[in-house]
Length: 197
Image 1: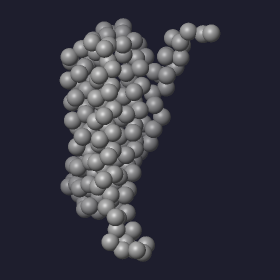
Image 2: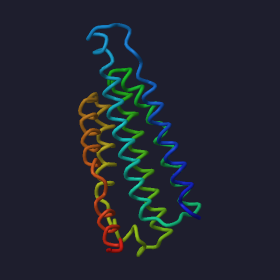
Image 3: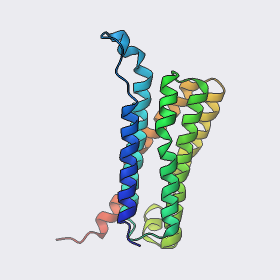
Image 4: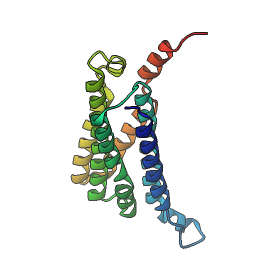
């Protein structure tokens, strides 16, 4: 099957996720700096989640540059990823509204963990479809950033339950910073395959 419908659907879902998050930013009930300061946890939660959703969109785009066609397993794996990403606005809002309290921070970490796991499942579905010597498997091989991210989320969840929510947030920020630059291996491989003029 061609990949275009999967990409269009994914782009639409991600656009809606970002729209829902920005609509959760409420106008303050006041006209001074104190009114804005009360919204700081909500705004910081939004910034972090926007960054995560943008990272997923960017890496999803790069991933599918190495895919020519998809099958049913890839469609379901992609839907699994989108499901967990669609919960990010809820966990973001709950975390921000409760000023980074223990349980909301842990649940936020759980939604990040499951989205990361969903991305892993999607990659593996593509690997299986293309074969072990397929284009994507050749480009990526063993992806250490995925594994570090999943472990980081689990540590963050544990720290939140141990009443160290700010340490959890620091880990979530560090994982996001690690993913800011798209996977250069895919870009390099695609540049090498591009015909030279």
